[in-house]
Length: 383
Ligand code: HEM
Image 1: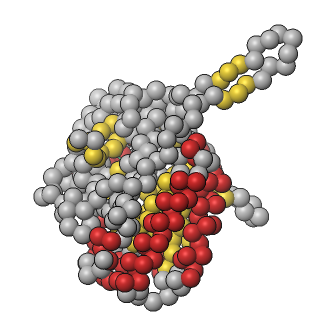
Image 2: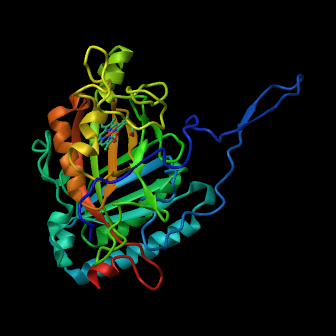
Image 3: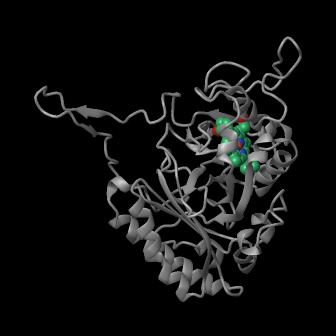
């Protein structure tokens, strides 16, 4: 289980320097004057598929740079399943997803992550509270099926059809076991630098990440027991009033986040790679990173929390009504659900960003420990 609580270290810009988002994409330019000019994107293709097997599952911290397309699904069982049923279901799921990833194009960088919710933990003799959320602002209005999960599936790929067809292929197995899909979200993120990308409001997102020790992010994975190699995942889907936010003057937008829009640098100064200085003030005594800003509200120092690993995706769904449904599928991993919960509770009290965001679904779950051919998915919990 988790080590004694202490403030986790922060790593800015996992994956390297803060070069422009999308760096690495080159263009071969046709420059024969007599021929029509055309451009061909020449980003080098992935050389290997994302490893399915290992001590941890793919999709948390590998690949380091998240794939651009995400299909996220939450399923519920019709009643509590016994441990033996979970073992069979998850074992088969692990085999099938291994086959799907092996058959996918290398360039897709497909990964499929599996998590289970509180009722499955109870079937495994574990405390359901390990993956349970308190009631946040806006949670009480949600139907129960959008506040909890029995099974979570998340396929990420650089080719949308690779993620979507993989999910389609897994569906019959789940429905045969009596599971029903409660909600799902197709989401996307620009291929960024490491975990940093632009979010739907145009700000750099994913800058502050856990420090790594021996290549493993600190305070993300559980280190021992049945859940060793697993992690606690939290998803919250926020619908965001993008037009109202974009209508704010630039300085106001930046005050909401506490970072600049153009470069991602904190308002306390420096570059995107500089840590936020929460005590720096103007000559008039105002905080440079204002009260009410998101990075101040979410900063782990106020809740004595470690740093969570954030890997969120944006979404925009066209509707037949007057306005698209747009927002952020916030997604984090940590070794204790309290890391997320304490942060969200503080944001509910202090964070101006929450005035533009309305939760429309949420779930906490245990991302199952990694698996191999000899140690099927779910074995650690249900065998
Ligand atoms: C509308 C939804 C959200 C948006 C658009 C958003 C966006 C951002 C942005 C742009 C940053 C600054 C850059 C960075 O460090 O990545 C940030 C930082 C952060 N966010 Fe969010 N966020 C959202 C929701 C959340 C939620 C729900 C949590 C957790 C409960 C959270 C936790 C954090 C943390 C811990 C930081 C780093 C703060 C620091 O140490 O400087 N965010 N977020």
